[in-house]
View 1 (cartoon, rainbow, N blue to C red):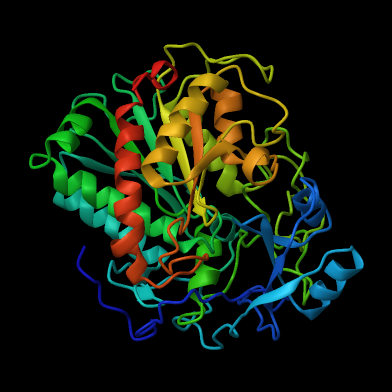
View 2 (cartoon, helix red, strand yellow):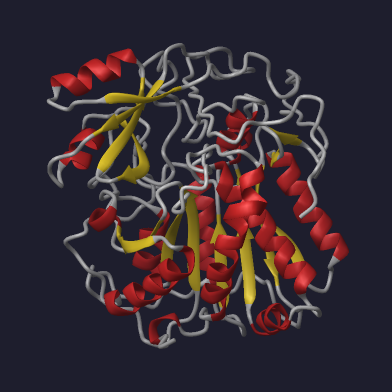
Length: 466
């Protein structure tokens, strides 16, 4: 993929090392809620001794990063976090000191709340695409390939729905060789469906770039790549490149040093977190499946704040509405009730940066789904293609209730996976915010064969034998 130009507000040349920055937000005004600058933030490396250490850190409200290394865990926090870790009996060491977030925004914010015109070349931090760029890209693809791509607006972000400035629509694209009835919000579709989504955690910026490249791979490959052509002739490919646009907007406002926002922008239940955390709800703890279970927090300033109630966030209810319109409900209500063997469809949600392939149940690794054998086999194949470790979340990372992958399997029976995009080969592309050059040189070549494999198995994921 050719390197896009940067806007006048975007990053220039970026060092190859991972740069992280944290955003925590005190209440400003209703017209300009922006993250504050925090001094003295660190990534702590924490040797672990028992399998419950990750759960302890999560329960205590630490920002536990989705990364492990030789059994060590990593926590983001200030000096007080280091003191708290020691009081709990851990022995943290500083792995990295983080740069301050940029003081200047990516672009001036008009008080009217009207966003600048979409521009597919608008970038930050060395080439990463803004929300507007992603949306302009969808429109470009649909205009250039009207026989293949259809843009769908499936809802509004929290800011936009509540009348806050700088809110966004929620957008998806459906890609297939169009025939009558394709890309309609109808669960009884003629073609099986493969669904890819990214950046539900805003700071995991690699994931949006993978979705961008996946869209281009499909639309540019039709008619020239036999595998892509066969796939688009037989399957609908749905992509949500930015599931949390308000959160991504907070990230991109940091420019050269992106803000480290994980959650959405909903500050209704915690508008003044000061130095204790950041506003918003963790959308990947808010879904209405086993809500309030392991790996969640009731503290509005916690990185894993589950929200005031299940499915309280409009980003989630809109996404779940789209899922219900695309996939029929075929599974019983019990945790061990299986979806039928002939169930069609696969959903993959991209996260970073643990280098793992995760499948339900994420809410409790001691409980296995009724389709565990098939899910485990498919995850093993995706793990072999990427070099990532497969398993249930609590088997290889930590339990986390209320996530997207659990919801779609729980409510609909759709085969679902989380791919934690990471630097499994130690190429210098680790962290949530690796240098942009890592996208084409490392991540996309690693993810492309796995996504193609998964998409081609959307017709029968529970009977896959090769």
